[in-house]
Amino acid sequence: MTRKTFADYADDSVRWTGIPQLLEAMGEGRQPRYHLRILPIITLGLASVGMVLLLADRQLYWLGYTLLMVGFSLGTILPLFGPIKPWSGARVDEWDRQVRHNAYFATFSAISAISIFGLVLLCWLTLSQAWSAPDSLRALTSSAVYLMTMWSSVPTLHASWATRPIDEEEDA
Image (cartoon, rainbow, N blue to C red; front, side, top):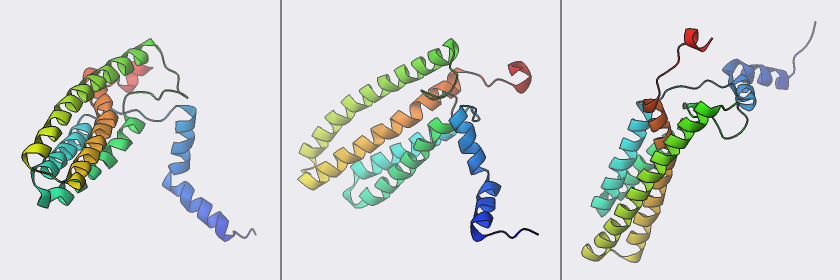
């Protein structure tokens, strides 16, 4: 008869969740890849609504910032399970490289356009609304978080809509 220690029970409970198997699969580059079509839209929608709220009214700043952070938090998960393979650790062929290239090209284009528009908008709002320095700084840092949300969400969004899912039968 073997006796289990507390550490053995703790290890068994962690293995029961499936997280160690997922981490092992991710380390070997064989984690599941999904076409996440709706989640990036929800992520960008939450972040955009949050940005509009925090720029529109000083009283709604914390509500807008909360929505922005929820969008950012969801956006950080998207590259892990999206259709774009990671930069290292996975077998990447020419098709995967082309999908990644197109997705990040669309992302850089969108971020560049939003950055130029956002800087002009922030300058105009600072002058027209007579914002104080802390208000301007909060808006500027929130804009940086919004751009990071775009950086993590738009490649997955583009790759999910630009390619079609491969069935199990077609992959074999």
